[in-house]
Length: 107
Image (tube, rainbow, N blue to C red; front, side):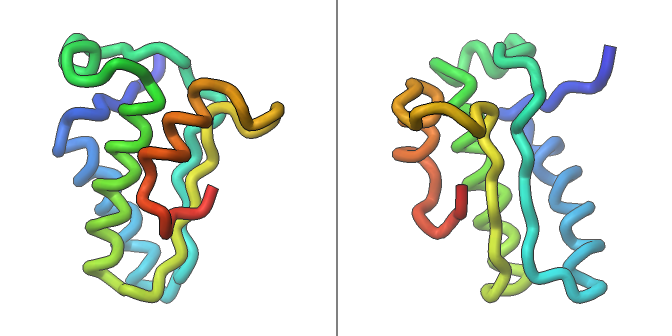
């Protein structure tokens, strides 16, 4: 089994931010967080207690990451690829994610 993110764990946010810091340090101005092709269920007990759905977890985690990225460089563009990247757009996951994400984050 592969590693899974614990969305409610600040250490997992920090782990990803360390990777982004490396990219920003060499001049990258557009970062992405790709939620596609992952398990659609919350895996950790902590996440199951904190979030009602994986879309809430993705939005919360993405917003935390974006907030910290802006501290590195306020000109960075940040894109999130949702778990559902095709369809009609009216899927519950996309509706919750779209309403919950910081409006500056591209989908």
